[in-house]
Length: 213
Image (cartoon, rainbow, N blue to C red; front, side):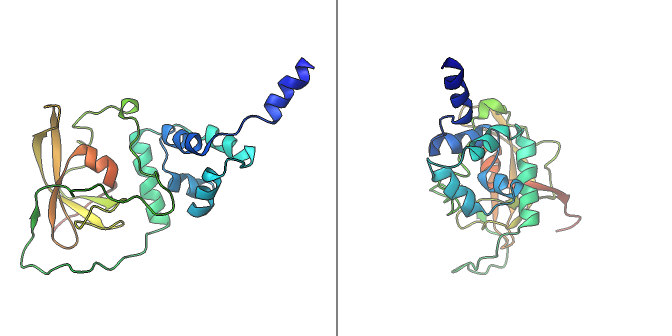
């Protein structure tokens, strides 16, 4: 009987709860939208699977088999997804024209809304898995680098917009630790300084640089 009980535990294991399912994807370093592309399913399909406590066991097995991504690999996966499936452009309402760039000195008052098909796709990963070095983008993001917005930045830039880094500066974070900050220009001409943590949340590098502005 013990052998049968042990075998049943292997053949009929307890299913992950919806929160455990999503948390395990994040712990592996993945965004749900990127995992959906890897498995060739629609995002809303994966969202429904994640929310179903009675999902088939094979889905839990797929999650457990995901390779662990580094921060750079996660950014590369998102950039590749956007290249394969570009987001539809959305019209911006009420954007005033200007003769020159406008400096937006601070980030939006409230955090950007996540994608509609999943509640927590872009929740922060545990930074302890990757490090919180304020200079982690130095060496592959610099002046003239292109960045794709993966999560809307308030009125500054919509999802899918391409930003160009126009300047860098030395700043400090909330813990008085030094960090490199990046002045980004949106297609509208607006400029905004982004910290490394904000870049983790909002943009990924295309790996390209602009020759001229």
